[in-house]
Length: 393
Image 1: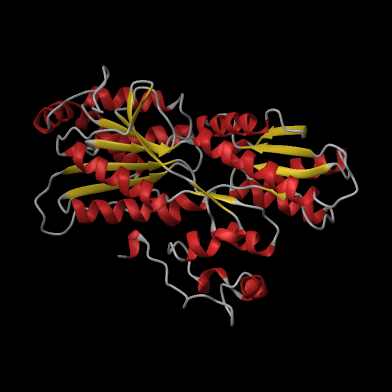
Image 2: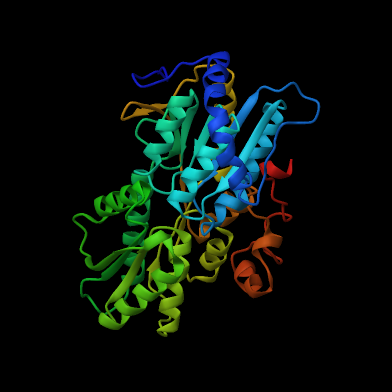
């Protein structure tokens, strides 16, 4: 399917440069006031001695979610360096501040960014970034979060992720209910992500679809501001007090939120903790799954997502017209496939997939859990494999 759509801006590199020169003088002062826009991170991917090709800006929304700094950023920079030695890469993390992200984007555009890869803090506020990029002839790749009017979108199907979470919750509660004398309807808490983030809303929609028609009571639900684990902990603590003995499951929208909810359950003395989902495949979540505290996570190959976005950004910079796997609201889209991971999947998906090594997972606090799962010890099926991450190649 062609990547074209009615709002696409097909502007050649010389035209972009000509347009931008008229704006750089006005924007340079803002860039200098910002002191650069690397957010304490990378400000070049240009490759010494390579013929300059152009500038790509990567804007990530926050750092509370571990993947952005640990995986997305280094992978993106590494791939761009390799695929386009003559490219300059600008980087910034907005720290969940939409106004700061607008300033970062303005600074990148003032420095001559031809392509912005934008993981938006606020998708409404990001409309201003898209408008400025269009005015300057730069293109915008929406990253992880859909943006109306973007030139491309790279992400996962978040409603499907929500469906995976809800389906796993139903299955986990059913497994625990087998053999119990209590035949009452199980109750669950839904701890969503931020209400201002479209992916959180899509996950919630998928969750509800999975729970529809099931013999389960939704006791309460909460949209967690900024995806904050601390706020998830506070809310879950209050709900466990309000519904004592009634919470059989907690649908947590990502692993950070899951960690907060599990902390609340442990503080309340629940053993075992309610069946709790997660998403992102974080190392801490994998360890909790092996220990029996978290029921599952959804693993998204964030390095694959970052690689896809980096490859796409380079091709767009060079004036190519990449094909899309889908079109969402007129925006050519590359959708990647997620994978549900429970305790039985850790070895095959996480260890054999070289996401984390057994040395990383099986630290002293989790050695017993790892041995029970057959990851280490006499029953281990393979020699521990080191992780292979794009940034380290």
